[in-house]
Image 1 (cartoon, rainbow, N blue to C red):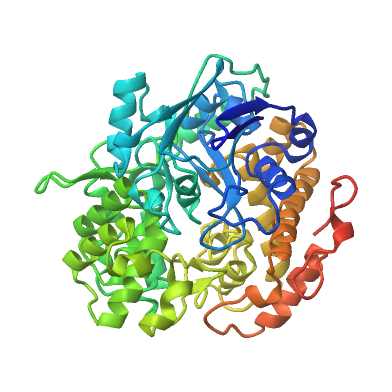
Image 2: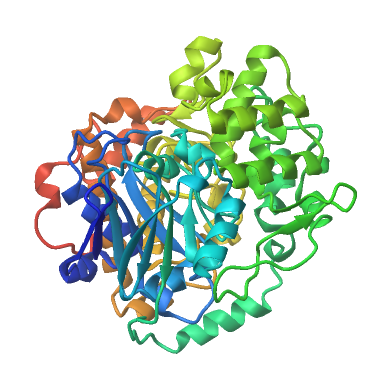
Amino acid sequence: MLSIDVGERTARTESIDDVLEVFIGGRGVGTKLSHDRIPYDADPFGPDNRLTFATGPLQHATMSFTGRLSATAVSPLTDGLLSSNAGGFLSRNFIATGYAAVEIAGESDDLIAIHVTDEGVEFESVPDLEGATVSEVGASLKHRRGLGPEHVACIGPAGENQVRFASIMTSESRAFGRGGLGAVLGSKRVKAITFDGNATPDVELDPIQIDVHREAATSDSIMKSQGTASVTALANELEALPTRYFSELSFEGADGIDGDAVASKKYQKGTCSACAFACKLPTRDEETGLETEGPEFETVMSFGSNVGVEDIVDVMQSNELCDELGLDTISAGDVISAYLASEDAFGDVDLIHDLVEKIAHRDAVGDMLAEGIDRFHNELGVENWSSKGMEFPGHDGRALNGQGLAFATSNRGADHMYAEMYDYEYPLVDAEDALDPIGLEGKPSVVVESENANALKDSAIACKFSGSFLTADRFETLLATPYETLLAVGGRIVDLERHFNNHRGFDRRDDTLPYDLPGFEDALSRYYAVRGWNDDGTVPEDRLEGPVIAEST
């Protein structure tokens, strides 16, 4: 690991072989290091908070679904330990520096860029980049260093202004999106970090990676033409599409913003490093000349149905503004929808785009909205549509009850990717694995196993869209470890996150939803029991002792 203190302008390396051996990489390594190195009472915006980037063993593969990098820190939005990962092309340049993890600590007096290579670390004062957008940062670093955006992780104005849901951006349009990690970099006065080198370690992986890559290339998945926006029509049909600040569950204008609408604007293929699945969405509106990447389903929800907008070009514009300014599109759209609800102004596109700018610059009402719904809902007189401080995505739990339970239990807050229970409840899985969307009977154990499996994917690191390609037996082969043991590692990662958050005051009272689900409290108790936690939502201290072993869920 490379540990950088931006206040002291120092960098040192230390061995983390013991951590890598147990926690694999990515989220697992970031969680373990953060759990042990960040004080439990650290201020998310303070110098004691540490932001750790970490790669995984699959970034040494040549197969699809592996172009990702993980980041972990205490979240300014949720106040708990949080990991986020981003696709694009950064991960291979990261591993070329020779490091498995890079930690950013301290607080700089002036705005800086950090340049990490296999030969060392350079600190560069960049006062001229104050207030620069993401593309402006990329253009400047290309001119200064000869490095393209695939070498860069940076923040926009939102991160500098410590908007609590600011993103870290890479490859210009890919985001470490949820939880405000961009604001953590902003608090440390770090505008950008670049990674470059020729020291990629030689890691051998089983040739089965060739099969995964070939199947990804030949798949006829609708994701290749519509991305996650392909689920919009289904969510709308099942009344799982939040509309007008969650007051409705379906949107009459959904056909103007659904997967077909997105596909009609797609003008070329888009992908991440080494991936033949190519599910990204470079889109362009010929009439206005607007170009962006996406929107994906969650942005279609947050800047479409939830704000009462039914024109895909308007959603594309919101998406592009968030990418340029460095904002999580889910939280940004939701806080704007809360404001529109208070003003009875749904569908006012000009106001929506103006609010995106105001939030990023903390200008006027944007200063309040930049705090997130949990902190301002009383002032606007609207319901608090957040869990653990994080705004809700789509896949509404009132229609998909298992997903509702997963929103409540997630250590990240209201996050759809933590367990992905919606896969079983739409369903997007094979019929024999599908679950009735209504009711919670039998679902707590599924939530536990899904959370553990996703913690494994985030540690390996593999894209969540790899599910039907990177099967359990293939994970066993690639990581040379029994799958039950790998799931147990995923469970230990979830334990560590919860244990850290317990010490920050989180317990059962925080595993809540803004709506009632029949049988919720019993299901929550069952979830804790399956996890081996106390019924108050805390982790027994002795649970973290001893080696990680396979456990049946």
